[in-house]
Length: 438
Picture (cartoon, rainbow, N blue to C red):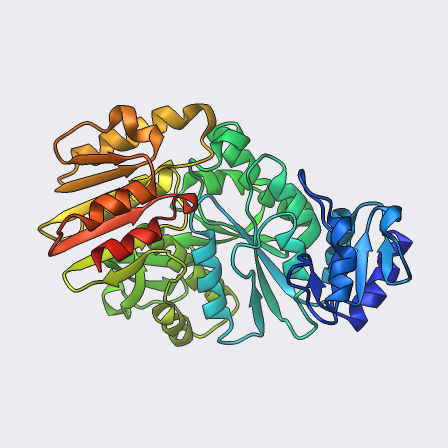
């Protein structure tokens, strides 16, 4: 650790708040002048100080006007080193969580469960990258007993970078699917990237929570101390799926519990889709490991309500909408459609936005998805985005190049007594379409 980080940490102890946006300066904070491909963060240091920041960390001597400017070789690297140094001053136990789908929902469920017993902190929003993880770590205090750090990745090596900064005590991978294929180099690249978390845990002789419903995890976690959850009687936590029409109902028990499956309490969650059963089971497993009482675990799982356009139920005067417009990739799309197909409703409508970051396989993946949705008995299908255009053919299929175009068409239609699934990548802004049904 460089001498400059020790000096910087002393300033941080006096002013333990971090700011990275000069447009929204935080009074009494330290501003980090982060730069990007199209902007030089050093240019905004003076503005941040004028707005109330105490110090500005810069990496260009040309902008060092007085003692309030702290000059370092690399601002981003200094932020990461400061976060790592702070992490190692704490006794906080850190759980790192990653996965292609479900990591944010699982993170929120884990927090709900663990805060029943511990002072718990979890990543806010989607601060899960090379900047967000350090900022999250710097939010921790000596009172924080457990921290849940979400880690995202768009290319190989990203998870390794993040675990080296956070140095987690435990790891959890929710699942592995077709996400960020463009940067990962295909599904094998996704597996390699996500299991960089396992590589770190193995190197430190620590523990992982393993979902045995997916053989890839049991294989890749071989040789690591494991706390398992799934449906095998040998798992540490055993789950029993009941239904998901629309909300997931399930039960679970520790393998030390002799109670029969029929006598276990059934948890009625507020989460839609069988795929969320695994996220709920993961939270039960983590809570059970940390000796949160069974009743408190169950209560926490039933209390959790998703937000931010994640599997939300929106009820209008004449329709019911499942809004899942936060993220999408081929795997999550397939799971959402499969779950929607099994829901009991006489008239269903599907609105799908395009999937991003698929690289060379974008066209074929949109074709596969279009062919899949056409096989299901949905009365109305709306596809949004140019990648769908060559394949959107059929009497009940409507294609639009943009969300705005789809919104205009929807407002001119009349839909009644329909169950509607709205699903797509965040950039589609599909949540706007809800207004068309109100």
